[in-house]
Length: 318
Image 1 (tube, one colour):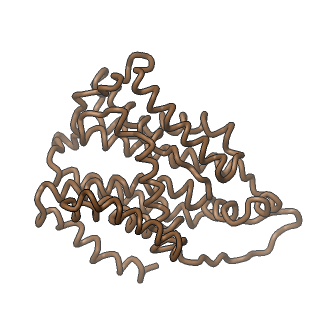
Image 2 (cartoon, rainbow, N blue to C red):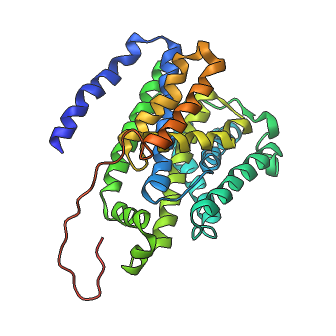
Image 3 (cartoon, rainbow, N blue to C red):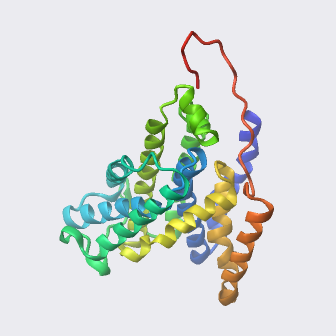
């Protein structure tokens, strides 16, 4: 553990000084990489650890962003205070929509979650309850303020986003090695066997779904305050496809793989922007090659070893 931490210290030092050597454009590219990395990590707990094929993650991202936008522009609540509120709203929404469908598996769950994100987008366009601004969205969202200092520049957002990304990595790493993470791993490997050993699969899958939505909702707050304007097209089905692709490309269930996937999917295309007409063709060919030659992703999770312990009669251990 100490050795692995020592390996990350130089990387953290480079990330800390990187904005000093980059212009605003490339700093903003790194900001987008950080946002998508956090969103993909929140999907990773659902897809990578629980094995649930979820394509509607953009709906929870939208719930967080719109909660922040509505409460800030209407009631002038400071945006950073709204991060946990936006997460809770997204989590409650996820719990309500996931409870009746959480027993579905594979393609069936995939199709239903696609419907969730499309229904959410159409509801936002149709200005549901008269508070979402319709197709034009919501303008004039405030910038975040920390101890009286207002964050405006890309270099200032960089530290906000990547500090939150670091906290996300720490939290999900601890979660993956907890009793809860081991239960999700059992469910992903063999749900029937997990049920047979006393694991409440429905409960654990619902908690994973809700937790991922909570985190996506908080990222929605950062996105809304970074852009100061949000609209339904920012939360389309394509966004869910991008999150899904980052997890699969980097390595389902792997934190380091997901971060690498975010750099490749969000950051790398900016380098080849002058070849905009051809880059999507190259991107599609690379994805096909990945599925054929390395379906486990570029950086799959390391194999885990669980210590066994003696059990009392009739007691299941995770």
